[in-house]
Image 1 (cartoon, rainbow, N blue to C red):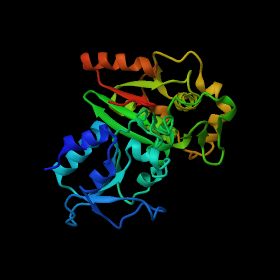
Image 2: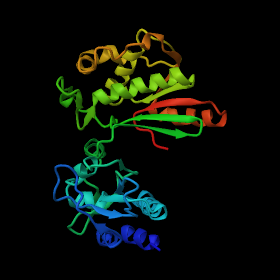
Image 3: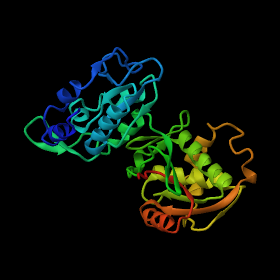
Image 4: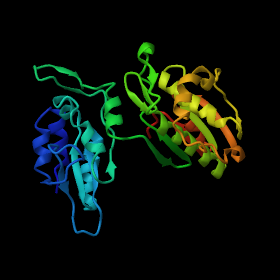
Length: 306
């Protein structure tokens, strides 16, 4: 039986977590594409009947939970080191490993603001605090759909509200990447927005948008893509942003639109439903009421965890 308490104590004390986890698993010849020197372990039962997935070994409860679940299930998996101290020590070098594994990759939460040893006898906030940005872009996390009871969350990543530096802000007309302190994938954001509207149309559930268009410029782009997609549809918008973000960021948004298929909005003229636009921070309280009143809804969220 794996001693989870010992692993948790090792992490909390800043001990040799790498050694403790390396002892749990076996080495493997599998490597992320383009990273022959990456460190990857394997565990579970490799019987050839089930395809292995890749788990990230992250922090705290997510780390312990991943280890426990993988051990209980016994299914084949690869493990990629991704905890705070390790990513700090390697200067974020490992971040590209996980997103380039040749299999389905499952990432649990990482402690973006964890304190780690600085190598000089002190403690610092882990490198890449806003470095959840490279953590998520390089790990290839763009969009997922999660059910929480009556609430279904469409989470478009990694358009996080970090960017305040307007002179650095731009959209690459060749790739659609929204560049500021981080790179947000504009094309994927457009697809996440369309998926959200499609789900609202097909299910008849309330559609709630949770973004921070007034705080973060990439969120203004995201909200603008949403506003553009609403044009010419039958959706009714209740709560509405005071400023039309598409008009506010038209020049940059049109760079992304130019990269989308010409028929991207085909059929959407017949889509309809009820949309409520919120600022992300206030959305949580509304979701509590949705849970209490058992209202089915779909949420398009910039950064909304469970």
